[in-house]
Structure formats: structure tokens, C-alpha cells
Amino acid sequence: MDCKTPGQLVSAALKSKGWTQRVLAIVLEMDETGINKIVADKRPINAELALLLEELFEIPAEQFLEMQKSYDLALARIAAKPDEQRANRAEIFGGLPISDMIKRGWLSDVSNVKDVAGVEKSLAKFFNVDSINQIEILPHAAKKTSVSDDTTPVQIAWLYRVKQIASEMIVGKYSNFGVRRAIEQLKTLMLSAEEIRKVPRILAEYGIRFVIVESLPSAKIDGVCFWLNEVSPVIGISMRHDRIDNFWFVLRHELEHVIHEHGKTFITIDSELEGAKAGTGDGIAEEERVANQAAAEFCVPQRILDSFIARKAPVFAERDILGLAATLRIHPGLVAGQLRYRTGRYDRFTNHLVKIRTIVSPVAVVDGWGDIAQIGI
Image (cartoon, rainbow, N blue to C red):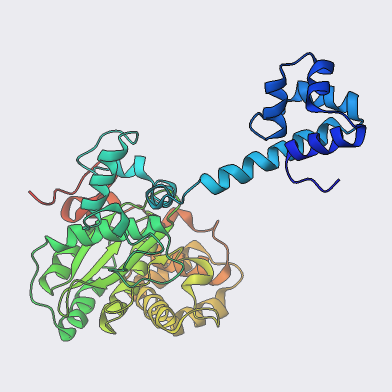
């Protein structure tokens, strides 16, 4: 029987037996009007009725139910209309950590993620657009920020927060010569962890906006370099790893981006900037390779490190690490960090990897860890 609806199947079954709808109504002890509705597909066949029809016509009850299910779905599909607002809401609420953004004070006009209208209004304000339909994490939205294709919505949200904060900072005049002078001065701070407190002031003096924004869950962000305009570079770091070696490596990495004016037209958020991504292998983009090379050289001159490893491997005695650090006038944590990377042994030398967030936070512009950067006041 070539039937496309459950009603057609019942009609064909009646015909095969030579029955009328009235006969079926009498047999099933049903009102004839009800049978008419079933045949006309105006009344659905439920499990109980399917079993009765199976008994009468020797057609499996599953066949009636499957046909009813397919018919109902076809009708619903015809009636359904794509809802752009619902699709946008799925992208936004599914892609952004709304609860964390509220908790962090990024969506200051709303306090509950269930307040959908309030969240949408606050998100439009956060992303500086007129409505949520224009938020650039949406596939159809105009892109205000040129970011790499693999940048996630969570990372874009973090980038916007850095941009918000940096836009309100007042710093000195920037020049390419100045950033090189800044690096020279930063080099003199590497002997002591306490000296890191001078970093934000030096960068600001040379026109570089330096912002620390705690990473969002799953973002795995380490840093970013971008420009508010032709003469306003911004360095944002997350301090995802609170270690002296990571701080200097990420900062110098981003400063190299500033030197080469990376991030002016295309922004790459540096995520998981350890292990393979901190190297210069074939899988690393040229901009990142240059920045990684400069950062590693800044932490420990690589020629000297090569010689040290050749002479001391595989055992690196404590006195040798301290001796090399003293000779280079850098903190032992920088030697330890580079040795961990070069040997792949990230479980070693942890005693030298001091935490520095509490040192730099009091003198930097910070958003996170319970603090909310005050903007727009």
C-alpha cells in the first residue's frame, strides 16, 4: 500500500477488506464522525488505537505510529518559520559565558542571566552595537574587529573588555623608538620579582596601554596586542599562569608584536602560549615565530642557554641555575622557565617560579580576581 499519511493507510486497509467507515466505527464501537476524522488525518492515531487497528487489519501498530509521527513532523515543518531572534539568542547565550560576565561586572545593568531582555540590552552595550543582532560573534554580523578565524566568542568577549578598559587610559606619546627604549628599561628589572611593579609605569610612559584582565573559563588566553588607532598600541595579558617566567615571556612576546605593528589590521589572540605554541616550528605563523624568538631571547640569551644545556644536561644542579642567573643578572625563574620548555620537563625547577600577580596588580590596571576595573565613570 503506497500511503503517505496514517489516514490513507486506514482508508487502504478498509478498502482491502471491503469495509466502509461505518463498519469500522461499529466494530471499534466508536462514533462514525471520529472515524471520518481519522481517515481525513484530522485526528491522530495513538498507541491504543494503533493496537486495535493492528488486530483488525494485521498491519503492525508500529507502522501506524511511525506514519503518524512522520505526518505530524511534516505538518509542523510546514507551519514552522525560522526565527532569527531565536537563532541569534542560541549563538549568544550558547557561545558566551553570560553568568561569568555578569559576575565579573562586565554586564553592569543586569544581575540575573534569566533576565533575557536585560542581558540582551547589556550585551549590546558591552559590544557597542544597537542590538544583539549586530554582535560580531554572530555569523551574519558585520565584523568590527578583524580576528583570526579560530578565535572563539569567549575570547572575543575578553578582547572587548581589554579594549573597553584601554580606551579610557591616559598614557604618554607612542613611538616605535620609544617601545625599544621601554624594552631596554624592562631588561634592567629582571633580576628581582619585586621590580616587576615598575612595568606598568614604564609602558605607560612610552605610550603603551597595559591591561591585565583575568581570562574567562575555557578561553585559555595568555595575551594580545592590538591598536586603538595608528599611535595607540594596547597589550592585554591574562596572567593565566601566575609565574615570573610566563609573565616576562608573554609581555616580551606582545611587545615584539608592537614593534612590528602586528594587530593593526588583524588581531591574533595568543592562547596556550606555552609548549609547542611558544616555539618556532613549522606549524607556527611567521608573526608568532618572530615574537616567540624575541621573547625567548629576552628571557635568556639563547646562545648562552644552548651552551649551558650542552655542558650540564641532563642534570641541572641548583648551583648551576643560580650561577647562570647571577651571571646574566636575571631571576633564576627565567632560567628555570626556559629549561622547562627546552627539556619538556614542566615538573622541574618549580621552586624558582615565583608568583608575581600580587606584586604587579596594585600598580596596574586590573580586571578580575574580585576586582572590577572602573570604566565609564
